[in-house]
Image: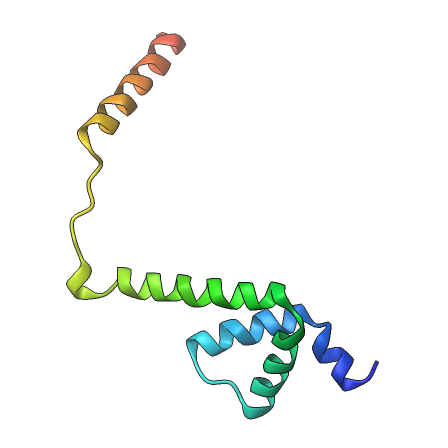
Amino acid sequence: MNELKKILYNCRKATYLIEKQQIGRITLREKMELKIHLTGCSICKTFQRQSILINHMVKNLFKADHQTELKLDDKFKNHLQKRIEEIIEKKGP
């Protein structure tokens, strides 16, 4: 298999390069390989968009100015407590 075919049909390497690019730098050769692969692979393009979005959301989640106290709402807590009590009652002593 020639080099171009190796690049075009290697989604595993493409997803690796997409993730590597998200956390740091990739070499010029890797950039070219990724660009060639993404030209012909819509699935990896979708993966790349989703990866970028997920990484962006995670970064925003951990920013200091976005830190808020997360709490369950009372309705959900009451429902959960009721379910726990029902399960405990079914098991008995």
